[in-house]
Amino acid sequence: MRSLILNKVARGILPVTSMFALYLLLRGHNEPGGGFIAGLVTAAALVLHGLAFGVQKTSTGLGPLIRPATPLGLAIALGSMLAGPMMGKPLGTHFHAYLSVPGMDPVHVSTTLAFDIGVYLVVLGASATALATFSTPLPTEMER
Image (cartoon, rainbow, N blue to C red; front, side, top):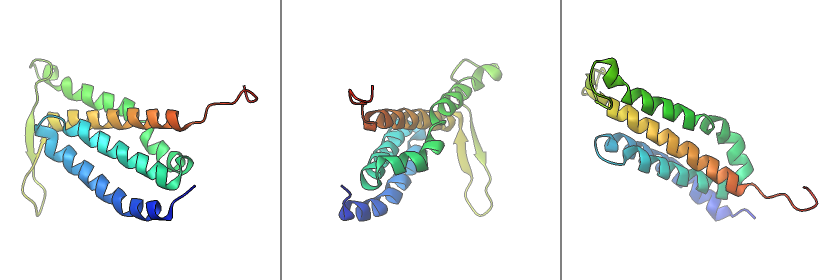
């Protein structure tokens, strides 16, 4: 059963939730938990989308985007950790830089941000996989 109210509320909340997750990711990259909590907020948005519009529509529309998230996130996080040894420093040493963007203040980027993006993708991919697994109906005795 689909709810008209839930559909309307979800359409308004989903963009706000996505922007909030992006804020948490970018704001939290120099503080604990930025990538992790942003991944959980995005996973909550996926649950809301699935409840409002159906799991099948969510899986069909967002599945191809989210399916590679876990391995990609692991690669990004591992790459950020290996930046130190590649520069002759200890494992996990983080590096910082400022990028000039025309019309803006310099943008702070770091391997810490890359690590948090990797964590975000791992949490998002793992959460989406778990949600898809739990939402798939089990086969009945007749179907086995």
